[in-house]
Length: 141
Image 1 (spheres, rainbow, N blue to C red):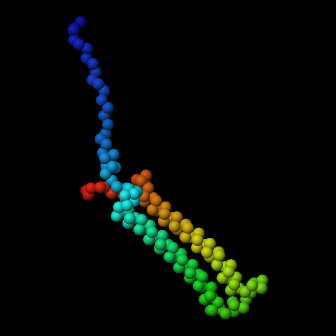
Image 2 (cartoon, rainbow, N blue to C red):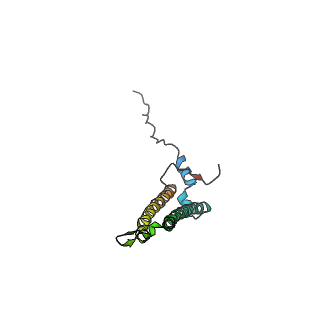
């Protein structure tokens, strides 16, 4: 029997990868941060949303106006329409009184869908959880 001291195994060491991802994530500016800080870039995104909503409103209002002005033009082009009546109500009155409401409803539905689509696109841009967006770093590379 030898008198050698018993060797203990070395202490266990936990090996992990460096946290480069966390450091890079802190240095990037997201769109929502730009909006919250009211930076120049955030203001540009808000102005872009407002321009798209304004453009949509003008297109829908213009289309509705053209349809609404089409009824008097129809009566000028076809004067026989002025003499027609439905259940003792003149046809021009029915067209202007009751025929406009379905057009208003269709324009409102189309506008609502398109405005919601614009806002959804903006919300997807601002959403921090999406990984498909480019991230802008704080320092130039």
